Length: 342
Image (cartoon, rainbow, N blue to C red; front, side, top):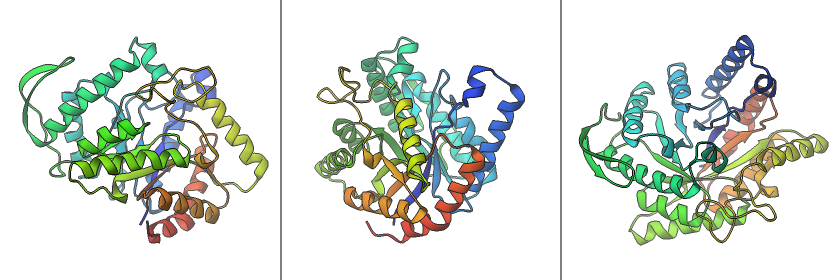
């Protein structure tokens, strides 16, 4: 079975970025709240939100979105890929995790990420420091999820005998996820017992990353399988090749400002010293009719051994169009994914 997820960037609409309109902004929020709530009846496994700052996204605090969606749903899993740990005190994230697991009725998924280099740079945070902060924060989070009282002495945080409440509803803790951009980060996640999701990679790189995760898990005596692995892709449910090409080019224009993308003359970023963190290949775009989309997803998940698929639906589409994507995906694609073997 392949579990179908929505990955939500929640892009800032261009017209509101240029000229803020409170009423239009509220309407934009409302339309997306209605859209996300509709995902449950269509059979999606859950929604992964994302944390972004300084204008690109309407999601600087995705935990607030989870708290708002939770009472409108009953089965939908809700998480973040990921909370940008370097921007937060890890003990506070643990407390928020406990709260959200209560508010969702035990449907929370925990995700952390080191952040986006251009966002870090805006606040004077280097990629090296962000990675170090993320790794130390992950250490604190992992300890606190299994111990109600913790002490920690590290480079960035020092404290003794903190009692962190409330404890998560899910025991021993909600599922943990990490967005990975390299084999080395996949190995770190395997040692933590966290599941992983890809960023933007060609299929060959996805397989390399997943193989590294499985290998590292085996070294510590843990059997890693499809339920530990998620492929994330752009999904454009259109048949018009001209319009598809337009959407693909628009995404490439949008993403090229991320310094992790492999472009000529650009230095490596984060923990990929010999290569860039990601590149955009043809496999990154899952396009076509609902049946064609299902076929592509199943083929990619099978070749990589992934039991989860996260769809980042066409970011050029508005909620009125996305609701049709959701409906077609739920009606045609999801039954095929859930009946597929990996």
